[in-house]
Figure 1: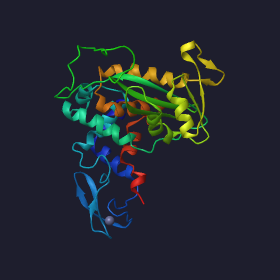
Figure 2: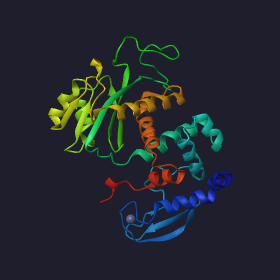
Figure 3: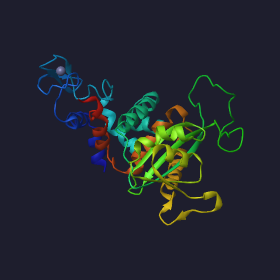
Figure 4: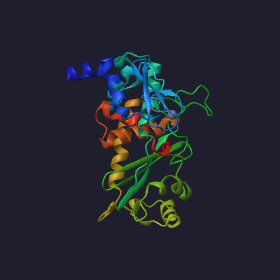
Length: 297
Ligand SMILES: [Zn+2]
């Protein structure tokens, strides 16, 4: 384990992995596959495109382009895998706290930017709420709350950020920050419809927006009446999505409150961790530097 960590921290290995993760050399400016090697810069091979004459390296056009201290990105990915705090990650990797914070969001955003999944067969959907937070903002647009604040009124209101989660029985999950307060059918159309297979069966609790949405979207729908104490009717339940919610809420506590404007990243980060597909720093690196599909002709 120690050897493995030491290897991670060797800058040469990190840079070699970046080159490797990028795979074949194609020009990020014009897509041409024919290019010359043209020296090294900052430890990375530079290439020059034969067609458009632009030069580039393995990170050009990826979210990690022009990253300083790029040799530290693998150990930083390990910190993300371990859900370390900004301060703990800064100490572990030896960067400033401000860099640690920037990297957290830049790297998570880089890795979660892929195409959203398609959820198939039985798909559970439900929302969870996080109290709106302007943590880190210089100017509050409301009076400040005391520490560990609460909403000013009971129930779900515009002071609650909505995280909409949909999960199929194959455990493929889509979590999205879907604005504030309870979503209506229009918002479900915007956030939920794009990830549902056409022949999916949507399962929700009794919230009125779901049957309306299902009708508008032409999706089959069943609801269970949680308020009346009904938790499952055979395969019709939302246990999978509620389990995800509870793991998300527990995990969020590591960070002592997160700013609303970063909530999408936290939801994406938890999606990555919970899916347990990217389990080592190299997986994260590959995902972060993989070319964006929609950018390629
Ligand atoms: Zn080119």
